[in-house]
Image (cartoon, rainbow, N blue to C red):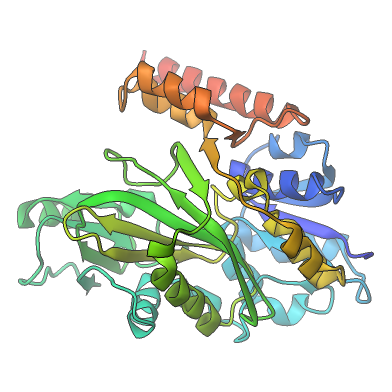
Length: 383
């Protein structure tokens, strides 16, 4: 197994999670951080052999070809950033001589498959429930929209979380289109009153020939619109088996190879599992798999480096794991999203953090310092 590893992503716990997972198995990584910054907390990890920073996804391909040129033992690439996944797929012809890429079996199609329109259609085809959906490209709001509804960018490559808004009425939705900077196409879905959110986490090998789903997260965040929060990760219970099979079929039909997450809401009124989206990259919560006993990035590495991935998979076990995004979750508590007592109770249950690792603490302190500088800068601006 002479293959090098290259992890590409933002200066974010998502990227760090891959580095830490591989590092725990003795596999050190090269890391390319895509961000307009001077220093990176991820690059402080003791599991990083060497690392570079480039300001935007547009320079990723040139940076990769500058540092790697082994066509015999190709470098295995991991992506933790949607925009990077799209660039890798679009540039597969020039990269595949030297790299094993997290792309699909249809070159140049990943960005299309990352669109929420494609995902919703495919989800329905495999039998998954999808909230009633409308696509708006001209700002003209259909008359049959059901309220409350939620807006999203058609693609995470084209838009951001700034495009997410819960609208209680047509007036709210009209205000969103007039006053919000949004991507050209907006997906509008009927808002589901959720009991909780959950994800299936795993990886797909050889364009869906083997789909490995390690378990499911349980995220109870009543006041938030993203799933960065304290969560429980465990085996998939029997009541989720039907949804699990359909999720596996979804991944197979995309022809994707790489780590992924597939997200759902459980309706608190009827108990239905509603598909929301798939991330064709490593998920920000994915480190919980490693802590639970199944190291998905390492299994992926073994498969493409000729190692005994099946032995590693069969030896893997999933134990109940509680993940805390420690810095972000503490900030949520300070903003009174939940009381200190709840934070303390969950802290005592936590078995895995998102940036703090006992055997590799420098990234955590670097991340904490970054948060301090950002908070201080914002305070100075206000004053």
